[in-house]
Length: 221
Image (tube, rainbow, N blue to C red; front, top):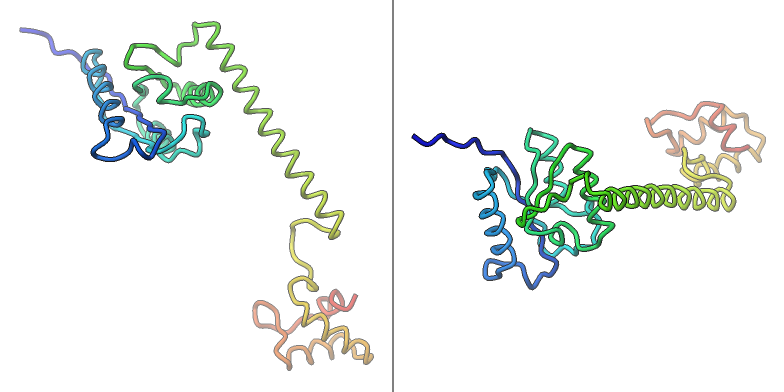
């Protein structure tokens, strides 16, 4: 009696770059699925789930792809450690994008295999290792550049307005209330009297209460 082979669980990932290749009557998804199924059957894998990004460019960042994001969520929720793709271009056509995606899976202990048997996550190939290091450095550079860009924007806003972020001043949040408070102060009213007058005219805090004297002081400066 033949001994039953233990199958390794895997998920399939597919991508089509053009909307014209998406649909029940198109062959791109069918071709990829058939190729992955044939390879899985011949190589001892059991396909337990599928992930698909229709009409997604191969140069699009992996984190922006709904199908790939769902794949990462699936990986983190169970013990499946193998992803099968038709070929490397289905994973990503742009080399840096491809290596960044593979790097994300390597960090999760994953193996990515093409239907030709090429293990994209193989770390024994010096050229692949070099590309991943370049890709990782590029990603770090892009992150640092974005942080610097956001800081520069905050600095410009602060220079122009005197502040950036944080809680809004009374003048920003309640300009009409502040204007009235200043007008009443010009009549030499006390802070408490101003507070009572504001309340009488419907100018209250977010909690529906009368402003305390210190708040009125902040309004009139």
